[in-house]
Structures are given as structure tokens and as C-alpha cells.
Amino acid sequence: MTNFDATKAGRTFWLTGLPCSGKTTTAIAFAETLAERGVAVEVLDGDELRRRIGGGLGFSQEDRMENVRRAVYLSRLLNKHGVTTIVSLISPYAEMRNYARSELSRFVEVYIECPLEECERRDVKGMYALARQGKITSFTGVSDVYEVPVSPELILRTDQDSVHENAAKLLESFDQDQFTAHIHTESTLSSPK
Image (cartoon, rainbow, N blue to C red):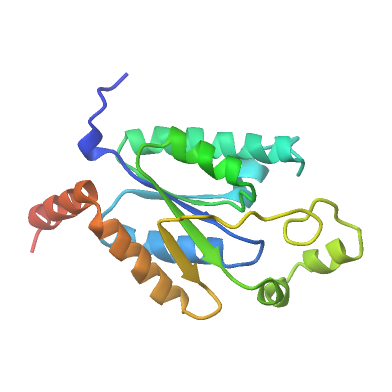
């Protein structure tokens, strides 16, 4: 077991929004920007988490909460070792995001705002259409609710701003944190010229 140093802990950027709103695309672009700076970063994508460690989980509110618990657990472990995590997870209920906030000490909630119509237009898998036909139940935005965050630290509009503009806004938020700004300064000073 290693000693925990809060000044070197990573942060968690929790990207929440409707299906097909651009969460994962934004997360990957932000992660690439951080990695270019030498920041230890990991993207935890909701679909990947379900596929890799969420076997047997459905889309009931209980199962979705369990998926959130697993993402929080992984984020906490990674943060403890200085890794910044970017979680791309619908997490449709405020209760889920409040749980994540209560468990992760350096939590940044990012609402990926995109109109439902645009999310449907982007849906290459046709899941919205299947949900509207009743073939997929408990589909967020159609047959299940999405509780819009009341006071997220950041709101990104993926229908109005480019992925690079949104990654830049996330980077600005990252730089405003006193601990990560300190880490960035150290890595810049110690990198060879």
C-alpha cells in the first residue's frame, strides 16, 4: 500500500449527457490534449465499462447505479495514483452524479448539452429510432428521464462548439485548479528543452 499525497492526486472530469451528445468524442479530445502535456490521464467510457466489467448489468436504475459505482471506484484508484480520469457516462439521474461527487474529492461535473433532435440525428446505431418504436425500453431521453444537472462546474454545447473548442474549455478548467496547475508547472520545468 502506498502513501496518499493529496497534492499529487488526479481529478475526475465527469461528462454527463444524453446518448449521442458527444461525451466520448469530447473526452478523447480532452485526454489527447492532456497527454500531450505529459499529464497521466485515462478515459473511462460508459459503453466500454459495461462491456469490460459490467457483464450482467442492464439499464434499470439499479443497474445504472452499479455502473456508476464501478466507474467511481476505478476513478478513485486512478486519482489516488496521480491519474486524471475523464468519465464519459450518461449517468441520467442526479442521485448518481451526487454519489460520484461525494466519493471523489476532486470532482468536476461537465454537462454535455446537446438538443435531443441533434442527438437523434447523430445516432448511427439507430437506438433512438428503436426506442421510439418501443423495441428498446428505458432508453434515456425517450422512455427514461435525463435529469439535467442543476449546477455543473462546466456546460459544453456540442451542437454549437467544435470538439476542439470544448476540449480547450476543459483544459482551461483543468489549469484553474491549484494542484493540477502546480503539477503542470513541475512537468514543464523538468522536461528537456
